[in-house]
Amino acid sequence: MKWFDYAVPQSLAETTHLLSTHPRARPLAGGTDLLVQLRSGAKVTGLVVDVKYVPELNDLSYAPTRGLTLGAAVPCCRIRSDQAVRQAYPALGEVASLLGGTQIQNRASIGGNLCNAAPSADSAPLLIVLRATCRLAGPVGTREIPVEDFCTGPGQSALQSGELLVSFHLPPPPSHFGACYLRFTPRNEMDIAVAGAGAGVELENGTFRSARIALSAVAPTPLFVREAGNWLAGKPANAESINTAAEIAKAAAKPITDMRGTAEYRRHLCAVLTRRALEAAVRRAKEARA
Amino acid sequence: MTHTLTRVRTTINGEAVEFLCEPRQSLLECLRDILGLTGTKEGCNDGNCGACTVIMDGRIVNSCLVLGVEVEGREIITIEGIAQGGRLHPLQRAFLEDMAVQCGFCTPGFIVAVKSLLDQDANPSEEQIRQWLANNLCRCTGYDKIIHAIRQAAAEMQEVKV
Image (spheres, chains in turn brown, red):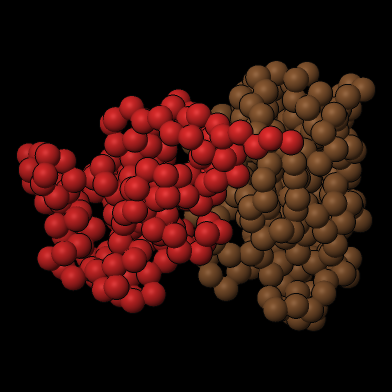
């Protein structure tokens, strides 16, 4: 790795000051992407800002009326073992168990997974279907954006110069809600998705009250397929509706052909994974407490 | 710009340790090149193979993906800290006796990773062991002998407790 300096700010104000006064500064949380990229030369920096000691980035708190606040630097191992996450957002705990292996999960954060802005980021589709918002802090203050607007291209995000992802906010799950993210990988662990699909559904008297579907690894960014969820709203929660929504998701995908799979194969996977994720989400919504 | 070294105070294998490093040096480089603890191996140097696994504050990490400066105030356990009082850990003995070692390069990473698993769960299933070790690669053994050795060691450790 090329030489860089290292700073350990203790407050958000100190962090945004460092990031905005050093144009090539990079925030470090778990380092599982950043250190690999600095070593390979894919990214360059003059200052690594370790954000793990900033309280707002370490917050993991839930209240039934307010929802979940998830600090951007909270490692996956804390998320997957958190009691409130397991009860209110079981699919989020599953995604935290899906990124890398044990060693990676002990360091990697969901915030980092999103900031890396890979089209294949496993956490992104799930955050989208859970209606997460991102809190960003910069030199001129804070702002909130929906998570589906965060990634703007491969490795590119809505973060402006000097800006930092502080935390996610997830609204409390409505009654009869279920969510699920599924991905296809040749190897179960430590692999990058060929394609992935997340589904979140809210049921009411056997019909979809609302639904959201998002895909990974089949477009330049994680893809929110708003029209598939909108189409499901008001339809009966049965196989026919689910199959149609899966076809809408498939049609929305814009995959490329690469070493992991062909575009055609990925489109096929979109339909299969969307269908299965919807089926699992419906099952969970039926089991969920009113 | 002058490049000054950073002083790091940490605990390694139960001993207070102080060293100087560059911010860009990984914990792995600090252990091997500065502190002479060469039991921890460098395999891929990008977080895939697990040969550099160490325990940091009770959790296993790839030391190639931790900066040396990040371990200020932390507690690190490396393969050198697994045997106690000159006696091999049951895992180390089982790896030898069950021939779970071929070239041996991945072995320190496996033993450190599994030590951490057995500290949390004395009797993990084969599936739990395999899942836990997804981030540790072995290109010689085909894993079966490693899994067998781990189960032997776990059983032996439970007998000793009873």
